[in-house]
Image (cartoon, one colour):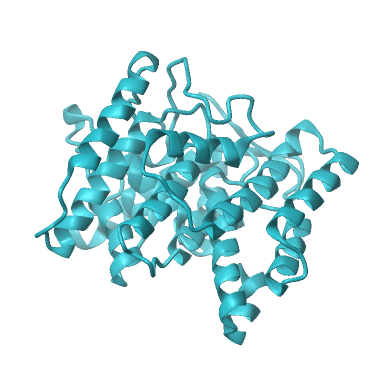
Length: 347
């Protein structure tokens, strides 16, 4: 994101608005651990400068990837670049229709040419192992009920009357609606990015013109984890659904509040040291080890730097935790630090 700070410092209104759009577009790729290329960054700067349009950015990307096809293992860089450009395009438009069709259309526009199922409702059931749930999954809507559930949620929201509600009550309702919408998970992939763009556009429709989209740029992974925690419970382990994390995100987003947005605090095994009198250090360290371990288990190419950013802990702490996991025989590194992968040692 440092690539764009110069435009924010200059303060030219047109460039500032374009910069905010691109920061959001690129930051949202982090929900799937994707990092756009330097080529995309350079093209985005040309757009911010006014030298080329967003459509020309997309044309440059199409031409670039035709000439420079990536290997299968690297294909998601192309996805990050092209989806970022599509997000920038959609967020630059002053158009929106609150409907399931609009939601489907956003997904189609974001992922056309990337996924065969772009804009299509999934016809199979899914599960997804989540780091924040210690490897467990949210229960998503069944394929048979998706369309009916989607239409019901939209119909109920259309009928809802915001008049007379306090700001907190308005936010609580929006949190509940967007959480339920995401939980349906109507697409095979790309649900969180689609939901985020739909939410931004819907908030504008509701009159929240000055949405601080920097939060999507800087805390997109928190946004996703908050959606997960709002839709997961395991009563046998005293784990309950909690919309408080999503509420904190939206409070910061819309009201300029300053809630801390720390991913590791959402982990179902996290124990706040301040609330623990005995063995505080041991409990905290064990939790950090677990969170680092499950990130590695979820993405075997993840780097220590990426873990540090996601968990908002220092790089030295991450390296210490990785060493402990290695010493305990839970993981090992295959190949170099730069190009290698993590291997989980099953016992």
